[in-house]
Image (cartoon, rainbow, N blue to C red; front, side, top):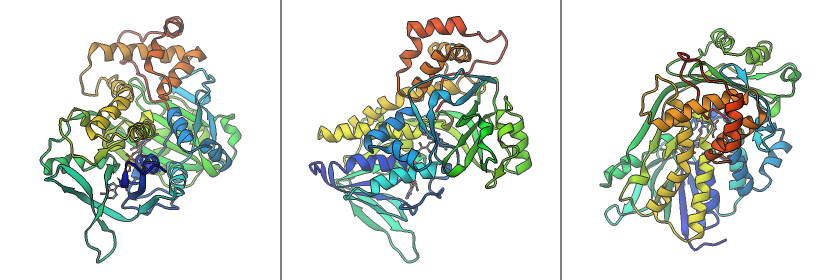
Length: 456
Ligand SMILES: Cc1cc2nc3c(=O)[nH]c(=O)nc-3n(C[C@H](O)[C@H](O)[C@H](O)COP(=O)(O)OP(=O)(O)OC[C@H]3O[C@@H](n4cnc5c(N)ncnc54)[C@H](O)[C@@H]3O)c2cc1C
């Protein structure tokens, strides 16, 4: 272990972003403490601090690659523990009611319930000798010195009767408390500017139920069936086999539409999807729980990279820095990419917060273009639509149409949406040729075309 970076690092929030940050911090600090309001160690079911964990969580291919890099043998371990995996391009994808032609992408899609995936990551982190968990502590605020110029720890309080506030000291504090991160408010209290926020309002609701299929052969060997919400077909769904012979179905309603949580209403909504495939699979399946819903009002990108001042000893990452429309399946993968940025900074012995925040903005940029740009293909979504966004969305509609006929286009699309290849691959001469040859332009007067993304 290289302990040069400092004695103790503290990670606020022990979800995916916090765990991945802790993993790379453990190589540079003598001690890493993860603080969370929930009980974490050994938990394999949904927990209060991560309510989105009840809903489908696809791990993008790039995220899977990084998990395998940080935790060697991660995918193999998943397979050993009965977590289904498949080639990303072989899943049953539908855009605008049409199935994408299956293709080999060479990318593994790991399909576990979110709490199970997190528990595998957490077990690897918990096995590190210098990482410990301060569980069931509320994070109340930062501890600072030098008039707020330097963060020296966090003020926390145990969630038990009679406990009082205490200060945990650290050389570095990482805020990984998610979308509800209070760093903007903390900055303001310390006399700094708050980061500007970019918001794309999508008014999305996930409604989710688990099933056991009487006979999995009804899936014809497919791991997942995903009719994706698009501007012309608003209702979408993600159906996946997960661990332990269970399946999960998340219905996605946008722009205020939401699948009901009563069983009959839920089933009716499934019937209203643009393709019958999901209904056919679940209509005779055994429901394992009641439907639950989660409302996601808007994607939010906090522009920490544009700040001119930031306290020493504090970093922010994960959903606290950028929360993406979840249908694009990007959040955990971006958190993993940010962990690699952190590792790079630690290896260079450089922990300059503003430089780090600018560097993770570089990681955030492409997935934000995919998801925020993609949402702007819905005419009802408010936001600026510069010519490049309009052009990209028109091109993506053509590309998705071409992918229903040409597996090479599916392959290129999946590799870009999986954050493995850069978006420039979509515009390579060969891809443009295939798109123009096989794509059908949207009819004049028909709905604004679907855009990139919504692929995990
Ligand atoms: C419906 C939905 C579906 C999604 N689907 C996908 C998907 O398919 N693929 C994907 O990659 N991502 C998906 N995401 C995003 C994904 O959930 C997050 O990107 C991911 O969990 C990383 O977030 P995080 O670790 O930054 O924060 P979170 O996961 O929100 O975790 C924050 C942690 O901080 C703790 N915490 C917060 N405040 C305090 C406090 N004051 N005191 C103590 N503890 C605190 C919480 O208990 C929690 O453990 C989805 C999100 C939603 C809403």
